[in-house]
Every structure is written in structure tokens, then in C-alpha cells.
Amino acid sequence: MAARLLALLLLAAGPALADSCPEQFAGGQPPVLANPRLSADATLLCYRAFAVLHSGLSRTPLYAAERLDRARIEAARRVDRVDAFHEEVRLPATGRADLSDYGGSGYDRGHLAPSGDMPDPASQAESFSLANIVPQNPDLNRTLWAGIESAVRALAVERGELYVVTGPVFEGGNIQALKGRVLVPTRLFKAVYDPRRGEAGVYLARNAADAGWETVSPAQLAALAGIVVFPSLPETARGRAMPLPEPRRDEHAGTHRSRKAEPSFVDWLAAELTRMAKRALREAIRSLF
Image (cartoon, rainbow, N blue to C red; front, side, top):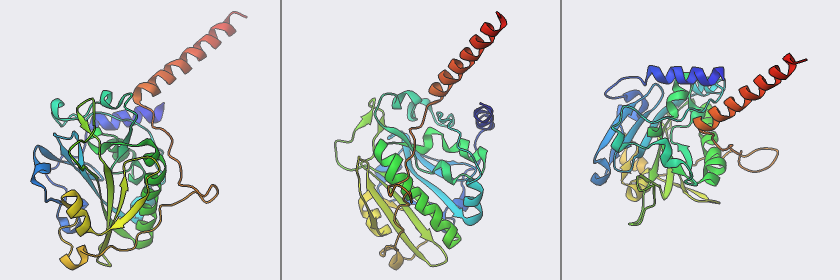
């Protein structure tokens, strides 16, 4: 309970205020939206440890950008996860997702910038903003995608420094929407750039159960999703896909490490009240004897 209250206090302090956050982007240059339809009603939000471009049309992020290094990942491993999903108050109510949009939808609230990348409790609390969340198939979120996130963290430790851009892909003319408001991605990508070696590659997975994954180049991603994730990367390097590590697997079970279902704040509060009521009842019974 103390950890939960700490997270709420950190959220009250608010995200880092900034008009731009070049430290999160390779070469200080944010991704470029090649599809002008995506850029309509888009807002750049800077947080302590990541940046998000949020769309008021899809009511989801279009991408989240992070700079990962060895020290940050080692610090993140010492931070206990505390779920604190919340609406992003810096966005207008009509153009942002609400917690109620996800209730009973059958989709997880999937992070773009993972909570497991966050080097301190304040940054982790910010990662639970719905501005950093997309509707994600539960099987994908808790298995394969969790394995991809883990593999990227391990690669950052190995290489020393990486720039990472994560985002949704919306394909076709019949895209599903939660309660007619929050668009559901058809695929998700995680692009990785190693500035020391000058190479980049992209994980790409369908937003579905039992989804496989493939590696594509930044140029292929631009053609598919309408986003140039690393504008500072030379054109020749954009056309090549660096080898990416396999999603990390549980060494005992031989499967992707499973991510538990993420409880909402309401679920947590109900559990806390139930626990407190049981304790009060036990104390009342003891006082009678």
C-alpha cells in the first residue's frame, strides 16, 4: 500500500515540463510522420525518461521514444513495479483515452515505453499514463511482447547505449475501436538503433494471440506504417535491418516470460478495502474474548 501511495504522490507532481526532449531521440531528431493524416491533432509529451507523440484522433500514442543505457537498465532492475494507470491530464478530455475505455474490452493496457525500462519510481509512475498505452492483445502483451522488451533491455546492457522507438501500426479501412473511441493497432513495432555501430532494426508483431514476429528495416517500417523512426540515420543504413536477438525466454519453462494481468487502480482499491475489513473484523472478534 505504501508503494501505491508513493506512486500516486509522484503522479501528482506531474511529468517533466518541456516543449521538446531531444535527449530521447537519436541525433536529437524526433521521428518523422511520413503520413500527414497521422500528424493531425498530435501532441508531443515529454516525461522524465521517455517521450510520447500522442494522437487525439486515435486516442493512443503514435510512438514512444527512449534512450537506454547500461546504467539506466541496472537502475530499473531495482525498482519494484507499482501499477498506477491514469488518464493524461495534459490532454483535452475529448482527445484522450479514459480508464473506462479499456474496462471489459478484452484488451490489455499495453505500454509502449515499458515500465520495466524506468530507472526510478517517478518515471515508472509516469509510464502508466494512458498517453503511453495502446490496446494490446493479452496473449501478445504478456508473452511475446514482454520477451521483446526483455531482449531489448539485455541488448542495451550488452551494447552500452541504444535508442528505441515503439509504436502502433494501423492498417486497413476497418480498424476496431474501443467504445468507438480508442483505435486498436493491427500491429506493433519496436525499433532499435545502436549509435556506436550505426545500425538499426525493427521488431514487428501482429496484435493477436499466438503472433509471431519478424525483423524489418527502418525503411520497410516507413513504407508500412508511415513513420521514419530515426531521421538522423543515413539512407543506406535505413535500408538494412540489423540482427536482433530472439525474445528472451524463461530458461526453465522454455517459453516467453509471462507477464501477469495488470490490475486497475479500482481492483487494487477493492482488494485493499477487503483486506482492511477482514483485519478489522478479526480485531473485533478478539476484543470480545
